[in-house]
Image (tube, rainbow, N blue to C red; front, side, top):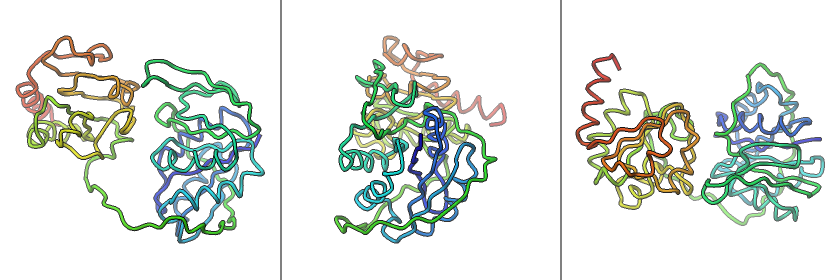
Length: 314
């Protein structure tokens, strides 16, 4: 079996979701070739070559791959698909944009958000906002799969796969990159952070996030997240949303503050290793998934927590 894995990268660096997706691909069996499509992406290709389990890295370097536009990238993947039994990608924003196009062009089904690999053609994935797990088997000759990377551990980085160039597919010219506005932060990236401190509608304002959430996050070296209710209310921007329609996280520690625990939010964080909830409502659904719960007024509890962390050298 031959597997083509579409790398997630920023040209000069490789997203760790790529390595975790290699673990999922390895469970399917067979040789794994990683496709790095970008512009000036040698650094990302070299990083991919070091991932254990990767047999070969394919590099497609062209200006129109610089920003991972879906149409040219999908055409490239389809042009390479003939030699592969499966095409796999992390279920990131980019992966969710590109891979359905690939499946449609190949006229096959897509298995989305796989959280476990049972065999080369059978996968486990969440459904009903994560309230049930579904086992899906693909009978298509080519499997197209997106992987929820947070469900897999990253392999080692002692590999030395061969790196070779492949011809870029013609640019279909259906879209063009206009610009982007990126949130700049000294904190860890939300999707890959070891610790996440999230706030909900209970905070009441953006200023409350700054006054109560940020001091605790700063002391823990944590990323900041928010529930959909907090984002919809304008307390935080979409970049911070954790949940089914936001980012899926699985940190070592997830601190949920003023979050009731709606199904939509739980779908994005319930795989966290340790979940701590602070909420004044003892009946809040978040306590059903929390490892530790504190029924308290967050406006009193968070300053006390920040003070205690400070006294312990954080």
